[in-house]
Length: 433
Image (tube, rainbow, N blue to C red; front, side, top):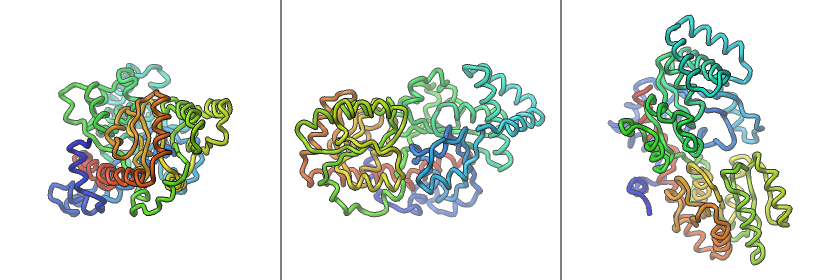
């Protein structure tokens, strides 16, 4: 069942950016939004990153609204980008760390000369809160570099994705230079160690905090003072526009025997469960599973696939470009994601936007997007339930799969459109810019 919020947004189908701007602006005009210069910094731990394409989608949508975004990353990714847009984004992003010790030292010195009291206070705060002196000094130096760059570019506010160490850096930069910060918490990392990360303190000092789902907002409320709940909002992640550009007319993939999983090969994604379920279904059904992604869990999956004699059934494709993922989704029957812990996976939105039903687990924000109308929601950790859902997908007639996919697309258009979601974020950012 949809929430009242989702029902309200479903009344606004695939609208354009201009309409979305009018919907979010108090006066309802583009001129009112564009009348004041708006510059914001974005800070991420590692950016760009293949699995974080939703951040680029969000930045692109903000820039379409006229917000000038400066990109900062703590460190650069070691990944090789096959997507040209990622390579362009990497060239536009400034790294605060990555061996720039002379520049970091210069930023620290300038901050101590310019504002010795604030610099000393911020350094002491970092030493008290970090779990090691080396980490504390690194955070402080990164904050000094960030504050330095923001001052040079006349930027007053930084928005951070993920409530882990990048927020610690932004928080120190705010203490150094008087800028403000906000952040989007995705989970599950922030909610696995909220006190070690000082999530209550980060929320208390932030201009606002965004959760990517109502579940995420509730967890932020859980770890914060009720006096600060009003600054915690829901701003959902959005699907890249090329997943939404036109109605899906190619439904031939729904007749294929291919299931697809797109995920980092990490423990939280529960992929060994998918392989175990595939072994059960293989006794009665013909199918293949394409797993798109990579990570430190690859060796475990390769061994399991070999041991269960599933080499002809399961293909580990590694990372692919966003366009390749789109093509693979269109060619598939359904997406399967057996996660143990999540925020709200963007790949679910991408599959539904392309008219493909989804099998996933009832964790975190997933039930806010997925139900019996557009897929199969199963208990996390259950091989039996996952195998049963996969069997149901393979047995379902094309007409049912097509109806599920279209229902999912309507839901994504209503709740995860980049231009609508960017307007909601811009409205929160506007007082800070």
